Structure formats: structure tokens, C-alpha cells
Image (cartoon, rainbow over all chains, first blue to last red):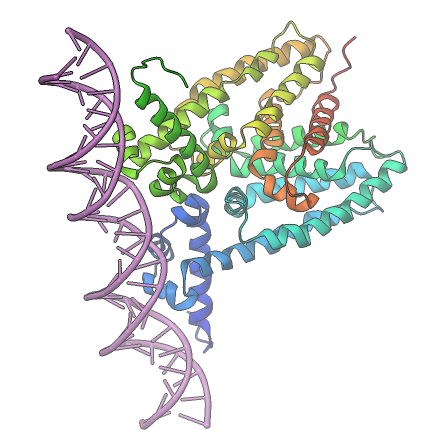
Length: 211
Length: 211
DNA sequence: CAGAATCTTGACCGGACGGTCAGATTCGGT
DNA sequence: ACCGAATCTGACCGTCCGGTCAAGATTCTG
């Protein structure tokens, strides 16, 4: 197929396969529920191979988490800038978060499980980078509010609510599917979700439609 | 202290202690993260005693879940009745959910972890009782909407959002504490949360203030 | 092509953990 | 006081699972 003599190919391919498999398995059962054997099978490699590349289960888990966190430091935040009208900004932010829930539910679930455990590994991230981001975005909210473009609400709490609403469609989709009696969350359902969340956020924050 | 000759006292006391300890431990690490030994220690009983009363770890877990589910079939739903004005009803519902998050965070976390695992045990509850409740409450929403008391939004999604927003203060409190740089979520924080969630829901649903 | 470096893998190990059990103790009724 | 039922518990067992290892295969480098 491809005859180029590539170096380091094995390492790259194997680690990628392992990380992908690990993300799926960790998403299914959390750290404690995951079995190295299961990850190995899912990756199509012998278990000893995982240990060759990652050493221990915890190091593998950390590697998976790391990749996920850099996604949480996400493109969504770029919507929240003073130059934009809050209607446009918040719509974009919500949509970006919802897209993430739809396209990478495993990542969202692993992050959720980590928080449920008390966030032993991601605490530095939460108290550092994420806290800083929220502070920055809060300034933008304050700016919009003083301009009369939206209500004065505690910005941090608004973000907690947006995160909660959007991630619930990834983390707890089994509940949503059960209540809606659907086999899988389809495009229509996500469209309804987007409309609902956007409405709650925009109207809830008293954002007037962009002129 | 109390000298009444009570029968079955041992059973009642022991099972209660075990269930309470189990709820705490399961909330901390989920089913897979919990250790029977840990639960025993926390309950102040030898491990064999847990097995005497509950047989297996899974049966103990089921017992804990059962107790939690009957709380989910909660008092909150009683707020959502046609006779009430939606402003009052939704405020009460949100407040009840938030109270639950504040007062029984362990229960909320165990439920969340169970959903994350794919809800192997509570699926019948979700697809049965809970689905039915949502259908009932959706009728009330439709009633209010046709009366012009609130906007037409997909009622089920509004509930998903309310659940998500309120439970996030229990399930992911570690994240909220980190971002707010607080040691524990205090009364003021929950007051802010209540104000924010209520504002998002009421204004978001276009509920006019009660006359 | 030789030798080094990297990678692969089946077989194995040790500890942790859920679960068992038999004997001791306490309880409840009469 | 007595007896059967219920309760308690330390010691033990078997399995599962993360992790190791050494020998072989493959790939890289000069």
C-alpha cells in the first residue's frame, strides 16, 4: 500500500490505537470499571503492548485525560469576546458546546466521571486554566451588562448552567433516550436541544436580538 | 437510654448503618470504585456482616439505588400542576431540585454515576416511571402555553435542562468550587445558583410574572 | 549486512478483593 | 431458666486483574 519507509510508525500507530480504544473503554466504565484487557482487545493488541507504551493503567488514563483537557480549552471560548453582540456570541458558544457533546460524547463522559470522582487528577486544570478562562469571560459579561445588552447575572453561574445543559446530552444521553423513547439521539433531537438551550440562555439572560 | 424491648432492632440498626455507609462510599467512587471493606469500616461493622444482610455487593448497591430512586420520584413534581401559575410552579420546582442537590449530594452523584455507566440497573425506572412523569408534566406545559402563560418550548428538553442545571451543583461541585475558589459551596453560592437557574428558566420560557 | 535499538507477545506472578463458612454469641419467646 | 432462631465475626478461599519478564521478531542505522 504505502511503501515509504517511515520511521517511528509503529509507535505512532500503536499509541494512537491504544488511546482511541482507551477513550472508549474509560468512557464506558470509568477508571475503575475499565480493564486493561478490554482496552487491549478493543485496540487489537496484546495487553503487554499497552504496558510497553504507557507503563501503568493510571499513566494511560492520564494520557487520555490530557488529550481531552486540551479540547476543553476549546474553540467555544473564542465566541465570548467584547466585540461580538451577546446574542451572536452566546448562540455560537452554546452551539459549539452542543456540537462537542454530539461529536465527542466519550470525551465528555470521561471528564464527567473524573469530576464525579472528585477530580483528583484534573484539579490543577480546574483551579488554574479553567478558572482563569471563566474570569476572563466574566469580564466580557460585565461589559455587555453595563452596555445594557444583557441582564446582570452572576457570570460564573451562567457558565455552570450552560456547561450543565449542553453536557447533559452527552453524559446522560441514556436518560434522555429513555424518556424520549429513542434508540439514539438523532439530529432532530439535537436541534430541539439547541433551540431549547439557546432560548433559555438568550431570553434568560435578557439578551435582546442583535440589531 | 431507651429501655423498651425492641424486636428486630439489630437488623434495623445494622442495615441502616450499612446503607448509609454504602451511600457515602458508592457516591465517592461509584460501584467499581467502592470496596466492601471500606463500606464495612465506615459502617463500623465487620465485612462479613454486610454479606450477612445483603448477600453481594451488587445487591447492596441495588438497595442503595432503590432508596435513591424513590427520592427521585420526588416532591418536586407536585409543583407542576395546571392549577398553579407557571411562575410559581417553576420557581418551586427549581428550588426543590436545588435543595435536593444541596441536601443530598451523595444521592445525586450515585444516580449520575449510574447514568454514566449506561444505567444498566435503572433503565426500567427511566423508561417507565420517569418517562410517564415527564409526559404528564409536558401536558401541563402545553396547557400553560396555550393559555399564553409561557412560550412553546419542547417540554421534555426544558426538564432535561432543569435537571442538568440543578444537579450540576451536586455532581460537579468540585468543578464549581475550583472555579469559584471556595472550599465548600455555601448558602450564598446556592442562593446565587437559585437566582440564576430560576432566571434562566422563567425568562427563558417566557413566563410572565404571576399577577 | 551486521549489530543495535525498538517493538512484540505468551506466560507468569502477587496482591487485592468479593464472597464463604463454621463456630460463637446474643436475642426473643415461653 | 431454657431453647431455637437470629446475629455476629475471624479466618479462609478462589478469582480476577494490573503488572512483569525474557525471549523472539522486526526495524533502524552505519
